Image (cartoon, rainbow, N blue to C red; front, side, top):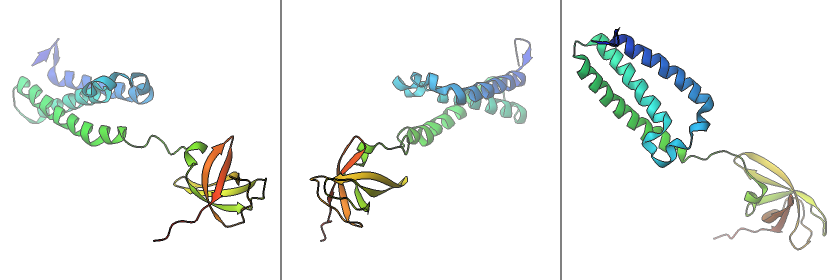
Length: 176
């Protein structure tokens, strides 16, 4: 079969090369098209690129290794690509979209955490606390919530954070 004077294998191969280049560009400039897939998830550019690429690759392979009619090959390639595209959507894109965006934190998100005093906090003064997080250990400036003195090694609860200063109170966990 020929399309515009080119064999169907050449068309499949040309589409495959073009889609590989577009996918490569999408890796760098994909954020520009992010809003397109928000309303209708099946029109996400990643899925469209994957569908066309998989269709052309499958069609090319079926043209080389089978003696089927070219229209049958095209429909079979589209069905296989749709199945693989659905797998990509449900097994990759949905889990990635619900994953944590980053490991970054703000001081305000540390309120309610338990910490250890590493530099004693004097009455009406500042000391330092160590908070253990999944990102590592964080040392922060702290003062007593009611301007009380807190000794080295005590466990404290971060009650609030204001202008980079952590207001803490001695903490004793309830033991059952």
